[in-house]
Image (cartoon, rainbow, N blue to C red; front, side):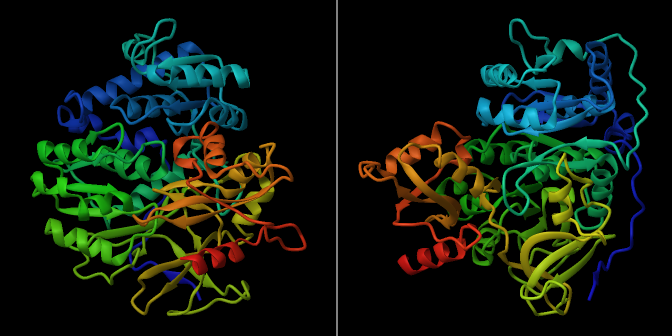
Length: 526
């Protein structure tokens, strides 16, 4: 059976994302759009509107044209939205990059996305330069601050050149190209069109309304589709104020809530854990908070209840989606008085869902039964860049996106995500592909075979654990050796955090790793 949203359909938003978000910026005028939570400087809506248009003009002068890809390699800053909307106004697609990636990881993304331009910040310049050297074909590396030998976005935003007038097809042209591991495998470029991400904003409006005067704290990274949507596009579309922090530091985070009277938090489960249990929370006035929304990874219902009770808030809201879905499909509405504990919400407007049997995917199951979650709606991605076969495996001929998540729906339409079919590890909301780490581990001269699964640490975070088969004569290889080898070659969130040596990796006759056997082994040992 097909589950439908109880909300009225919304028309597709056939606008470029910069117009969909900043179309009312002039109307909001001197209202504060962005505040640097560390430095305290602010940007008004009028300034944001002018700056992104001037920067778009400067990008055009530099040679950015429709169809180019610009890599935005930066932590959260007040310049991030300016660069993003300027690039799309100039006709480019933006591929968002994890600021902690290595030069080799950045080069892989640059090569796959066919990026021609990089925008970074001076502390990350060495990584960006090295990546540009590795991949070749990069026209220029710009910086958001100041660095000798590089054009600064700060200066470019004062350009007097004519604003580019680029004809965009919102339904076909790609606005943003984040990288996701999908249900398994290595990261792939997710083609999200202007229409898909703009329409998803309209779909979310009835359940999480925002307006001028609302203050949102942006501590989750803008490069991640959750942060890009919930902390940048959605609030700026409605005239809210976004207080920007470059990373999560608990004391700085709490101080920003108190100082700027934040009323809405969009977080991941590790932050919920800190709010529920860390003693530092008691030292700050968090009374301005009206609600907390958690997404990006599963949230334990008891932890959610402990957090809301400690802060004196209504029940924490959860949301569900994935990069390939622009990203939202389900939200617990802010208006819901007593949502069932553990639910990730109800279908948002214009979205359909099926739950299909794990034993027979051709068979739908009804309320109460578990199965794989399938989604159809205007927010479904255009596809994986340059990977038609993997796109076809993700989105079937009828337009249903196969999420790889296992869920069930109750009689009132609330969705509960109970497991994952997919092998992807979610470390603090960031995607870690086991296949990526396995391929790296197999390059170690002392490793004969390797498998990686997600296990849970004492704080409830899913972390990568490697099962290693030593080569003959390599008995001296230690857990520390393995972890150090990986840590030197990947971004910090991808590090292997546990290691176990085994006699052989369980595999099917096809050679596929039997991760379920490793998970069973893990459960038996705890």
